[in-house]
Length: 177
Image (cartoon, rainbow, N blue to C red; front, side):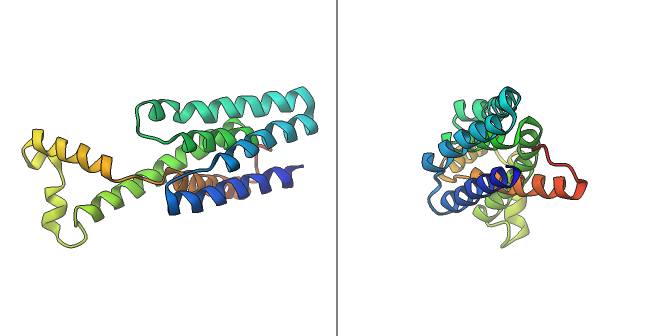
């Protein structure tokens, strides 16, 4: 059963990685079956305990990105993908993925901001990107305006966080499934 769960997880995050990069969308046709698979597979293999394991993972995965979604900083597909990760792998795995997705997402955001501002072209432009070195009122408005134009494919960060968590579980010899 563990191999099936890992296969479903791999397919869900792999397809989401590609679709989020290509179209900035994470598809319901991927996330909903992955969530349902988590519930069904864990319930079949462990009964009520499996259902509670999957349910707790789902709630944690969903809750972790709910506030960023409600504030407009995250897409609904990202929330559903994290919920799927939780439903399939449980709370501990979802928390670890959240941590590593945050780190990789932060690195991606810094790279995108630096690239957009031309920081790779000159040192002056990277220093100019620091808001405190300029008129703060204008710079924060410019940053907010730029942030609305630039989207971060957070499904990519979730997929990378999943790979890092899975690899860490293999190295440590412990996976929560």
